[in-house]
Image 1 (cartoon, rainbow, N blue to C red):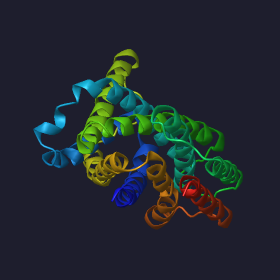
Image 2 (image 1 turned 120 degrees about the vertical axis):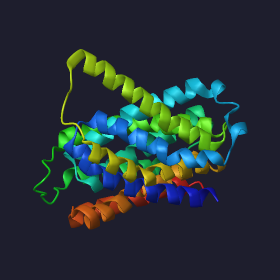
Image 3 (image 1 turned 180 degrees about the vertical axis):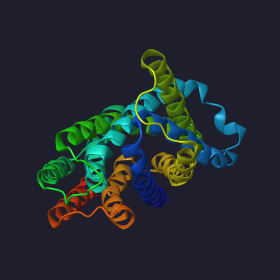
Image 4 (image 1 turned 120 degrees about the horizontal axis):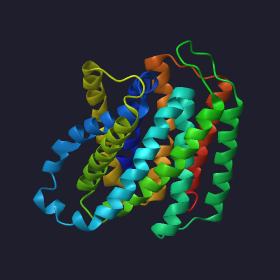
Length: 292
């Protein structure tokens, strides 16, 4: 059953990311990330009826881990928002998810006791080859977006390190708490931390960048419904199965995002980019399943 939850999480996150991309490109990124957290928390609230009060009994003991996971995710989400400003949606997703998968694979051996095989390490090398190819192939032009490969790669690297750590930490929490409670606490704490950083920055420097309107906020909340479902399904998946396989499925998000970005935003990929997107996707899945 965990594999079904992983598939649902991947599809929901892909749709959420494609819908949110225009807001990351139009408005100040940390503001949108924080508003996204509000929407994610609201979207996940009905799921809390499932575990009931008993599901909250161990939250206090897990608070340090939740805070660490949320701080990592806040940094990663901010980096992801910036990568979408400088790269096509499909390429940004490919880089972000492949790098975060590699970081999660390594951290799972250190923090969760999961081990890597020689075959999985070989597949990692193929992932890096695919990522390099994605960066080397030129993108078809999109008039509304000014791409910058160096900046996009930098923000993707930050995302990979931060979200790789965040995914691993919240996996640990999801195996102790009720998974739905863990996911809700994660998203809510990300929102609180983001709001705190925004307040401190506003007091120090004043408003920065373009701010979303109330109407934009309403759309952001609406577009967070699949994102909230994605977080809930991710927590359920890692509570029942290996982090390695779950993140392998999430790695295939790059293909779903590329197709959705093409259908929704008209962001076409070149044949070379489609090749490398497929290569990275296959390599990530192969890395996770090579142990048999």
